[in-house]
Image (cartoon, rainbow, N blue to C red):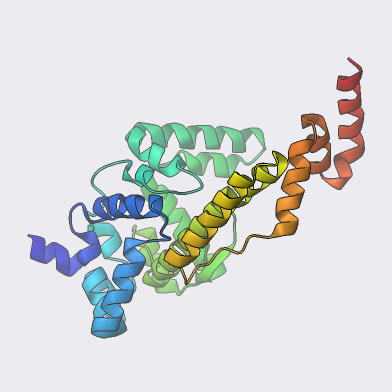
Length: 281
């Protein structure tokens, strides 16, 4: 059974594979490494077996030339424990919390999203949000047939698709070309997100030290930056001193002034007037 699963879903589809990756990633990320088990595994296998061999090991028959759909995405059993993504560092944990809530949570989320679209006048979008996945797949495939492209939830093109891929999407299979792009995009965004989060933490600590005239904090921030760069030479952090100074200036302002400065240009006058009323009170 495991051999068949390995053939159809690849190593990434073996039971608990993604759950184990989340645990490893979470530990190493909190030790200061910009680490992704998936990315590291792909790099190691590519160096050892070549691109084609690595793809076959990780994705099984989905990686074979001419395979139009992502079979691994349907047969894989790598994510069996809900919410393991909470172990990793990321900007948002909404998806992981949704896993913990299960099908009921997904239904509730779609109901709220659909209600918002309905109130905004998007009746078709509201109805589609609360329909079963099979109906949404047919609608997505029809859109791919009409536009010749797979588009994300915001309507942005992901990649061009053929009519055959659109038909396969109608029956519930993700086009292989789209799955590859989304997987690569997800890994890149994860790498950038890890760098950005740590960079913000360091800049914030640095600015707090300057605002408090506490050079110990400034030295700690420098040490954090140097430690990160030593552990992650491929994704170094460069602290922008002008950005740190702006943070210091913001820290020394009161909340009303900070709010006024962050308002869009078109709203600054309105925000200034309302905040002036608050000060007068």
